Length: 342
Image (tube, rainbow, N blue to C red; front, side):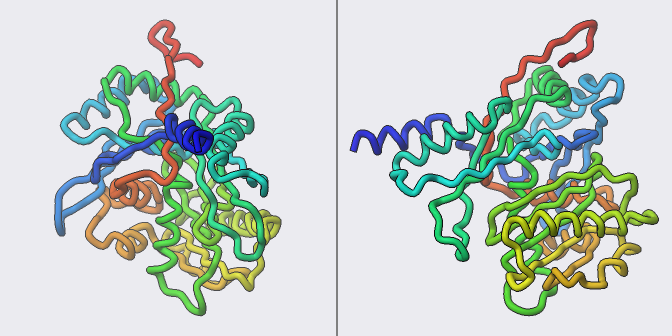
């Protein structure tokens, strides 16, 4: 009995427990920039507003970010979502002989071993795969230290702000992808797989792929084109086909069903309306159309254009808790001659 209690205690004592303020600001740390969103208005006038978009390489980033954060004073503490390539994921199957009360310690230790360079880590138990009889499987995530993280830490420290919670955009947007799949037009039985593809204003094409509600793959790809520009649809189509190869390695077959959702410009819709054989349902929608489908009471200001950041921020601002909360990394920036170094 003592072993059981200690197993649970060792798991939860360092487990991040966060209650998020509903409607609070959201900061998305992307590959090339950080973007800040906050909620405005109520009822039919509710909106998600972009307050700042600050490239990491801009001169005076820390001062500009500090000023932008200072503008949030009086609002709840912001939620920080990581959306860069410094995320690492690792899947671990627990041994069949592992006792349930030893699983927490096992997962925590495995995360530390698998992701030794990460400055913050989290994990979630994956939904059971009905096709395979196997012990529980855990998905672990770690965030590696980067120069942008140090710059953000310097700005937040200077502004006297600590985030209300930290998470990764792919894991926290799993529910967004499944909700879109349920609300957008579809045919046939429910699909087990969902793929959400979207361009982000801060520099990447992000794909989130789930099976039975658990994340199987996420990919981030720099793209030379933007939605609505010539060849963006072809580039996105190539990424879709490349992802299918990864999915096949993880057991995907067309019979299981795939709902493919791509957030794009109106000019790109015709390209995706030629339904791929691998997908049961395809929905090519603008960000505004996606927002109307799942959050009809919120509009984006300024209009989101072709970028998905406003949609993810609006969705996350409704959270009461994170799916995989990450402890806020206590980073000490090294400053020399007024510049933040690695």
